[in-house]
Length: 241
Image (cartoon, rainbow, N blue to C red):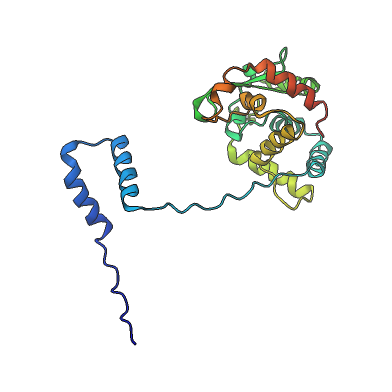
């Protein structure tokens, strides 16, 4: 028995269908929120399932890779590069946040850096280890004497660019002979993962990591940065570099 092949699916071109829907909706003067809800309901009515791509786990450098990387930087005796990389390693700030740090944002008495308008345009405080204070102060003072505004800026008094920071990190990864490149995100991920392995609860990491979770915001809001910094300082005494 010969079965007939199904007829090819004929669809209205997307632009024409959009014009048809627009003619139906135009008199209602829809805004973005309304349209978003309409199409959400439409998807439900049609039984449309959005395919989800499985998330790949981010690569996290090993402790030995971080040590080899740091030793390569340290051997250059370039104070500015050393401070930049240690700041990323110790604070887990994003590269755009790093570039925006001003000299006035560093509080040496409390061992803290103020991040202004980080992700989501939110301000927050991040700690750094007390053992890093002297090295950071030397860099800070050198920049202050030459009239700098930002903690990391070029000789033209311009803050470092995201691309410039990434290239600097990549150069040292190559020099260290690492298989995987090092990026600001990987240094951030290394610290946050390392703190977790030290037994520090997410609720203590969140206040200065810049992460937000709708499920745990209520819990996080009850925690002060001082509580987080006590746990941080204790753990950082065991940090590999």
